[in-house]
Amino acid sequence: MTSLPDLHGVCPPRFNAVKDAFAANFTDAPEGLNELAARFSVTIDGEVAVDLWAGSADLAGTRPFAEDTLVPVFSTGKAVMALMIARCVDKGLLSYEDRVADHWPAFGAAGKDQLTVGQLMSHQSGLPGFDGGAEPAIWFDRQAVLDKLAAQTPMWAPGTASGYHPITIGYLAGELFRLVDGRTMGTALREDFAQPFDLDLWIGLPEAEHGRVAQLRKPAAAPDLGAIDAIKKAAFLDRGSAPGGRGSAEWRMAEIPSANLHATAKDLARMMSIVATGGTLDHLAVLSEETLAQATRERIHGPDRVLPFDMSWAAGFTRNQGLNIFGPNPEAVGHCGWGGSMVFADQAAGVSAAYVMTRQSPHLIGDPRALRLIEALYGAL
Image 1 (cartoon, helix red, strand yellow):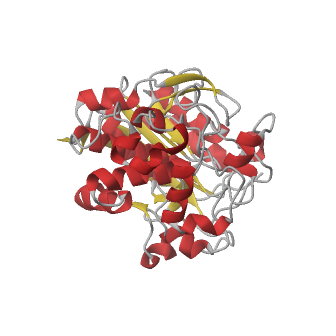
Image 2: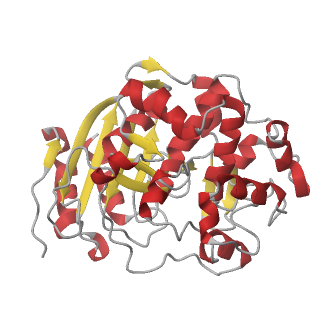
């Protein structure tokens, strides 16, 4: 049995079961996925209620995981991306019913001219990857990615099905954001949220911050995608389906809203408290209830063309309906990331929570360590 490292942070006695579950993940985790380092943070009515961390930020065990340790959370960052697009809608720069091509004419090529912003954000564009593959280094040339995707024929009729876009959605949503806002999404996140609200969230991590990043241990097995076809290959398996060939420093500095958010669990949970509180952050209104309802409502529900699940997608968020990975409320929304990280918000309970870890698992969604923590949390509420 693994020994338990020192636990740090805040956990009132009411949430002792959460603390016990967090500790158990280090010594007796499901499927033998004992934590190397992890953090679990919870807000209730917008206030941080639980914030626990433990372990080592490096695989050698020489650098303690600290309050300011950053973790790459991969697709968990799509929840932040969804909120950034919602802000554009709230400010009147966009509507979810707008056609993407109205803002980005080149995108309308090859039968994509009727695709709406809401459909794009719910993974219905038919562009989960590059048709025919690409060099992994293409992802470091943003314009090359955009040109290739804008010209590409969709892999299914847009608007007829969802098919999870692991990385491409970040470029597509990021370009849409830039066209209507004038800034990159990473810049806007920093200027509108990170700096004014003291949130340690980064889309594009400056080199000066790289020393704070935790090392990850990759999963021991590949995820189960079900029966493999050309669509799943393009999304996850083809050469060039993910960035490569440039080293981790350049990857961290790139702005890929779908894939390379670096964050603390506490500030991820605080960001998602916008959803949990009905549109406020630190008691200041940042989204209207109307926009929030549009951002979180179901856009499509059914068998996903990429993920081996029936998915209920909102405008950038995974909806909990049918998955039951974000607590008992089917209306809760969030997102999971490669290796097990997740963030979610449940407006009915006024709760948001985030989990980050350094030992990655092969689970696409619903890592059992996170599920254990969420179950303990709701048991204590």
